[in-house]
Length: 217
Ligand SMILES: [Zn+2]
Image (cartoon, rainbow, N blue to C red):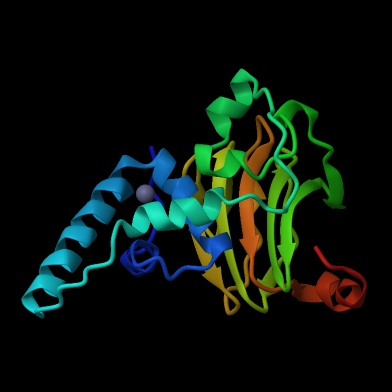
């Protein structure tokens, strides 16, 4: 059961088509997994439409959801995308909006070590914004860190505990740079998540003071 959802603010921005691509991807992927947020989005869109009507605005933008989806589905580069045969696990774990970002099936992706017990696949990197998949070893503690920007995490498989809060499949977390956190992955199986970071993380604590100059997680 999903217990951590998107904020209304986030859904409204998404509905208005004003979220940047990386954040839209997180929202669209969570919506694909969460009927509660799909219903909430519909409600917000209805309220928005009524407010616009009451305000006498005639030119209600078309289907903004479609517009955002079109933006997300747009090819990442000029090359024609090759057709990938996705296996059962990929179809089960990777929400449809995210599949277009994968170069290959989940089982064939080349994970790169990104820290102790953490592997990463970079899906897109633009300026300071990074979209990636993370795979965290069962039971792994992620070093305490804060962020210079914002961090969105959507759990695709497994889970983790962060500050006494448990996050499982479909849960989404949105943190800004002020939050110092050190999630611990659940035992039992790896935790796979979609991660969008709008600025590089900063390690905190004593390890951070030693390691910060050397790393870019
Ligand atoms: Zn939700």
